[in-house]
Image 1: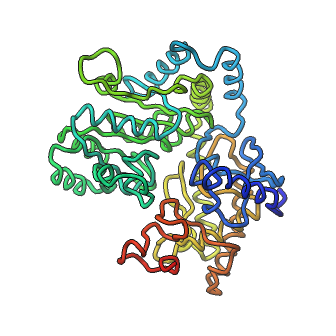
Image 2 (image 1 turned 60 degrees about the vertical axis):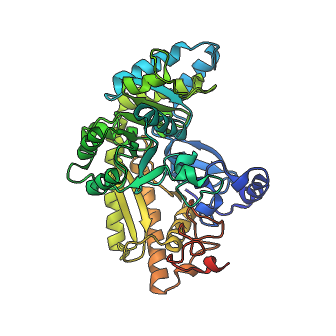
Image 3 (image 1 turned 90 degrees about the horizontal axis):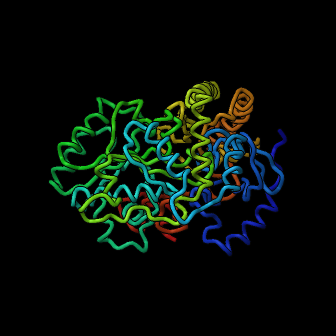
Length: 462
């Protein structure tokens, strides 16, 4: 695979695009500030495990559109199902047959799903879960796991992040945080807000194994306290198991949210859960009505057809087994390379084999944006696009070999930069920046201008 040579056309389009769309992207994690200066700017197409930018550069794609692909780009069985459905109709005046068929399929697939409701993205269904929990319990506070990065674009979550501009403090104050793998910390939260917390929401697993029956204890604690337990399975669903990580760890939440890869790139999300809670958004009760996911495009058939075809194909090929297997080889291979190249303290692989993450750090394990930028600049120069890792059915032996070869060179580059103490000078442009930061020029989430106890960087004085 030839190495990317230039990004001139992409850069020119991005400059025009940025004048039309704030940030030059519809997803902050895809913005130019999230990638090295020498990286693709605008993508043109994708197929299988590969993608091409508008300059004609070809990449082995491990990011897969922010983890929305599970079978591979342009997977035939999914696309054919979508094409058939297009000829039958995209949206109807009354509920469509496919809505019923997919709902029935999902209720039988996911053990904790007694009812389901469809959305178009993850924020739709996580925010719907929060509204349901408040209505069901009559309580106003909700709490999310502080160790997990993202739950929604809506005020209840974004108001607690450094990008809280435009959100009233009164709204943000209703959302609390709790630690992962620390049941005592969650118990303390309930003591501080006795009888006031409607729900806890978290990814059942992210980068670390639940310790000491953490998820089971969380289940028992929420039941004792009268709060709902909500599992965000946007990422863990399908990759860990077709039935979600909750199935592997044997814990049934009250509500679950699924999205991202369940449509293999097509837009669909699902809220699933207990009948008595979900029915608050229905017509068969005499309680206060909950306005639950009433969306014009919630019943749009393309996403529904893609979801059903994706899940059926995932079952047929046992995609979770494939993801775990390829992931195990990827993780062990990268760790072996890092040790062999003498950078194991700086280029780390964290997380589970089915959902790993490459993290460039200082020797103490603290994330190092400049080293991360230098590493990925070299990976991109050698045709590997791996800002995050989303293993799919399209990734196999060939892709592993290509990745190991390219990332060995990236490790050698950062080793030289470390030895020469020139990490900050080892790449073009600015280091990548955190998505959640108060000002665009910030290089850290906790800004020194706003928080005197934060690390004082040059950007804090601008």
